[in-house]
Image 1 (cartoon, rainbow, N blue to C red):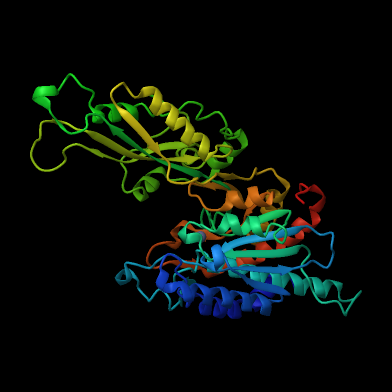
Image 2: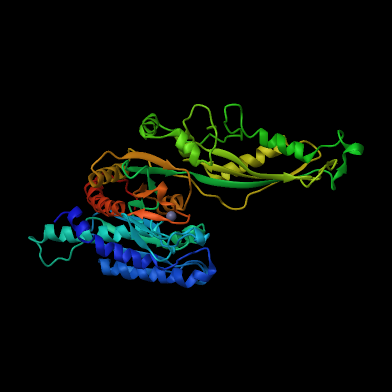
Length: 480
Ligand SMILES: [Zn+2]
């Protein structure tokens, strides 16, 4: 028996189990579903124990367990010197509204034409659960290989496997950094595998090598203490909306580059090799524009392709701006206040705190006398994550994916942001993105689905990855 044979033989049981799990409405954003999130964690811990993990436990989060539970599982390799791999995923799901747009109820999963429909099927329960199947396959096949020499030894995977599956990802992972820091000893690992992203297409397997981070800010400008009559005062006092328009217009130069001081100083340039791989992806600009709300033209930083702009370059966006009179009719005033909300997508090596500081400096430099400017930053932001495509762990995963799919695996990045950078920073290990979701899976939207054949490929690729990482152990950076 080989990995593919094992996965195929156990496919029906795998999808039955996944169906049971998907029926639990573990919506982390909705306090009414707290008990369901806990039930989902307990279901997973039980399933992991049945799959062979000697340790599978519920981890409470937040002060006095006020957060939602995560699941931790541990399966030591037979060889104590084998590398340790931590798999990250999440068992909570997005809300399901608008319910009337679902073709079948979101928590009554159905199999149809090779797809499994239901909330969480792709994001992220399906992609977590293929690891349970992969671990079983890997342990069983290693027991079979080693049976002749030591028939009494129970099977174990060729690397020490740890799983950390959180219950608050869809709510911004508020307690996750503390959970990582408090348990960093038990979570120690040489490689972190993330299974919560997508591939380019079902027939174009690919691996993500990075995710953009995020910084957010609000600018509040105050001029006169009340709105002024523009006939009596106009032309002789500063107008907060004019100043705001100037500040916002000045955020980009004519090449679409962000003008904040030092904004690009730490940006890791896109390598020639990565640009070449991006350029080989079958990208249809018009189809992409159609998906982009029927945008009529692409726009952005000069000198970069659309994929480079959304994956590998940082941005500054105005999300909203307001002030003065916006009701019906005219009102001849100098407004007292002007406001804007901004957000920045960040790429590797940029720090959200640096960007916030640069914005404060920019606003302070450009605000004229008579206007008071306040920049408010709502939180610490999200740090970007990045894994060089030529690193030993990413190359091992590429070989594993290629064995599963039987074709070349390309590299992508993702524009979004999650807790990945925290994982890498707090645990001090490189990230590898092994995932089989598709952009067409309608995650976060009605009628979420997953391609059943791709989940099985994911299980296969994961089992191969444990072998590849065991074989590459000497090349991995010494994390611990
Ligand atoms: Zn997810």
